[in-house]
Length: 418
Image 1 (cartoon, rainbow, N blue to C red):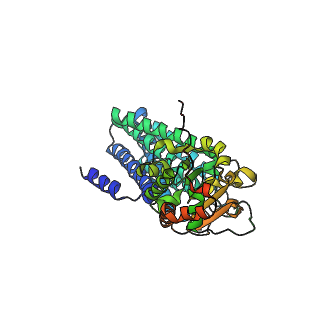
Image 2 (image 1 turned 30 degrees about the vertical axis):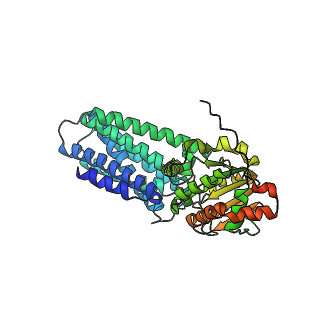
Image 3 (image 1 turned 90 degrees about the vertical axis):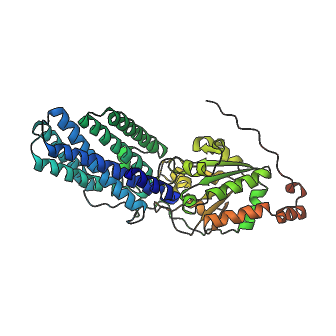
């Protein structure tokens, strides 16, 4: 009851910006519970046969690893430590050696379960491995890290079920463990990378920032952008972590509704790894009651980008970076992106001129068809909503092209097939 009350308060009070951190700390708590149960069962002694010791060892090893890894992920997401990879010479060799040694102790304990010193040494080694596993992983890979930690926590819980002969824990833990692993595979596929590359590639190192871009970013005003949006036939909105930071999901819905009233077709392009955790943007847009039919994956939206009048990028960086497609030497080369640069006009809402969370330069911001609208995303979107709804836009259109003042006809309904 006490735990349920605490968890409910956490869930109700957490901001959308802190949802990834909350998930990370919850995974750490769950894994800690499994680890403590395993340590308790071992410490009580009794008949520790090979099967039970296997379950206990697996439980505390993966549980301790997950606690450490989730805490490091929490610290990176909370910006208590830098999001870029922390590496040292020979790190991968050391990590692999440490993991092999930990597994070696685990196997030894299966046949010699009475050695308490080695048991706690295995717990400490697994904890250290969890820290070293996540430290070299860049901030851009946090969605994969979160799904991996989720998988490890589930496997630890399943092992707890075997140790305690509890079928509920076995079933729930196995479902959680393997669904998290499958999700990790899907996340890596979305980035066109392997799990080994994510774990050992140190992606996001600030020493390798991709293309050196020359030129300046073209700043635009909210009034200019509102005019472009109001008389567009199709607008594609690409949400990113900046949308969550500004708590602007409800405002972007208001903008979509205002454009819809003018006959503008509005679509939301959602990248699988946008945000800080799997499905982050889907959760964010669902909270604002944006219809699911308006959400498009990158495979669906990319063929339509050339016919898009205005693409609006809100706080996204790496998932729209054309370097991934055009520059083989880029750290994100080969990662599928939402190709907003193919739209007639691109508007990027950013707080400032800094690089994204992964620390990689984005040539999109310097293209001729890209305009930068600086400021808090919620405030900028509110200005756009007011300007789109303002009669002054129609009066301006009447002074120029009278046909432009008429709302565009609504596009044909989207046809979906299973």
